[in-house]
Image (cartoon, rainbow, N blue to C red; front, side, top):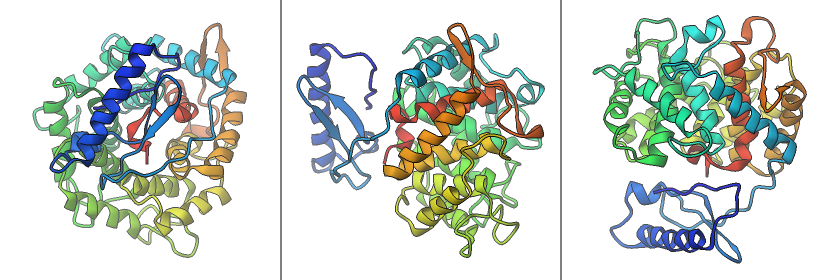
Length: 390
């Protein structure tokens, strides 16, 4: 069960229905013997009623926790850009439902489609719901049609296979969690089983779907996909998630507070640290000391300005990581990156998009990738993605 906020004022009938449904969910969570994954999945959702605002916040232990309202809001100018970006992304969808315009994007349609679907969902677009619901449905179907009986997306021998597998799995997990569509579950379970089977003895993953070595860039995506799947009611062994947490923590550099590519391998970096604390928070370790020190590392090595190496890739992780930390840290981070993104956006009529110019050299993958990631970042204050709600 889930609730989504609307930018438009709901009708009185909808107010009453939401209020009744909210309290049914509350009783279901608190009642003896009724603490199922479906109840637990209702986390941090805002519910409007006729004269006041209720915040129903359920933790994974079924305890009610007070939560402050996010001080960050999407202003009118930013909202216009988000709407224009969604329209631009919709116009760039390929006939088969995938996305990809630049040569690099076209070589990785699974990952690109996953990024775009996350961008759409961050702005409240679901299959058949919202202005671009048909595009979401088509993109979702493309991913589902690409899954083999073994749980593979396309060619398992591609050089960075598990990276695209992870992004697409996160997108499908959020879609399934918010829709409970029976059309998604059977194939979705296959791709999750493949992730579980490909975990190595250290608890991590690498680019091929086999249990060999591991690195943090691939591992965080698989770990987050597993947690999103578990939140949506899919069976995921807790031992697999616990091992993933151990692997991410093994990449921590105590001296700097950052995270390395592999345990003790290479210096810590912005993107690696952002990915690490993003995944640890999604896995439930919101106030872990490594998360707090990692956040300090990100602030010290901030990439909220353009022309920084791995700007887009790093901020795909850093934005939700700072969002989950919240407070002034999130408020200041969002304001800085918002200004950077708004300066760089191209507006053509009622459409908006980003060329891959914020990344230096060859780091810029393409306009679809950039626009999808930046749309997600700007839309974070809408609170639509259940995965990032504490």
